[in-house]
Image 1 (cartoon, helix red, strand yellow):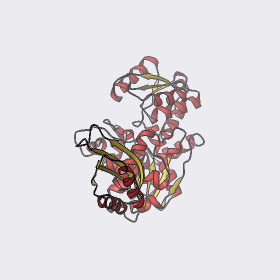
Image 2 (cartoon, rainbow, N blue to C red):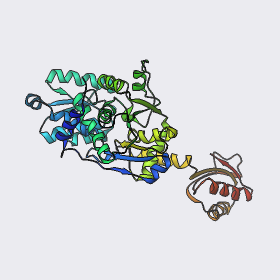
Image 3 (cartoon, rainbow, N blue to C red):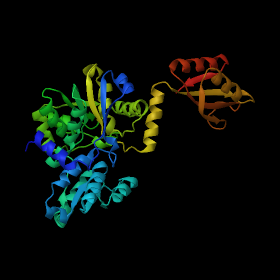
Image 4 (spheres, helix red, strand yellow):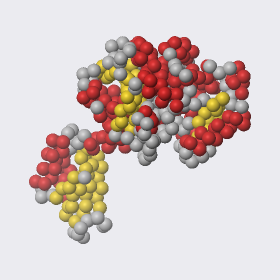
Length: 400
């Protein structure tokens, strides 16, 4: 089956008023960091915090009266679960969501809060999916696939219709790629409205399933990633077929670039993004020569990131940029030493934000202590000045 521009426009009409038409914004800080003119589509502003509402709303609107009466079922540990739950409830349709047993409780509670019956089953997504299909057959429910469904793909493609309407002079589009529904729907729109304009998908290094399938290679994925929303093993067969036909290229980015993308969006654009949502920015940072000087559209496809993880990402980025300085000192254990060190740091303009002072276990001598400092600085030059000021006081300083 193939999708057309008419399918996407029909989907846009169906979901109008049910799904937020999110803004596209240009941000100078993001554009400067990426070396391109960047338009950000803020689908993290959807009610569930992610773009998945588009596909879910369109697919549910296509149900027959019999299917509506029987109810629907989906498998998801994240954004698709909440999207199906919310839009089913809005339409008065009973929904069941199967989630793996390891799913964090906050995601379970949010999905239930949107009105779904949640079933926890299996140790991973594959086992949860198998159970969802079993329940669908046993209870006569319609299975709403997160990406391998033409109705879902058409709904996701409405994003590109909006992006091209808001910025008709775009030179390229970049979309995070998991199972392939989003990038496929958007590629259909771009192919029809802007023939020849390149559309790129983005995967992280540990999960290159779509790139591997397109290249005819065996799928080998695994490992931890902050971009769990696009960390899939089994891509959609319909998206795979259509991406081949449309000539969409998949760009692979390292984990570090995704973290940099999250931090850049937070600091530069004041936008909260989950890992998958920052994949487009990660691609711009990883392939600057490809997009230099061009007007590029990408999407912040979701903002559902754990606050602890966001905090850690921001701190790690400060360390990488040299704006956090971590020092270890072996100091004499006598009065006034801590005050002297603090004064030297302050005189050099540093701001001490964390101190660890250990006498008993870490120090090499009973007459010394180990001091660990975390210092906020403007840049690497100021960090060097602080180290020099401490060494001028005959302190042995180690960075790390």
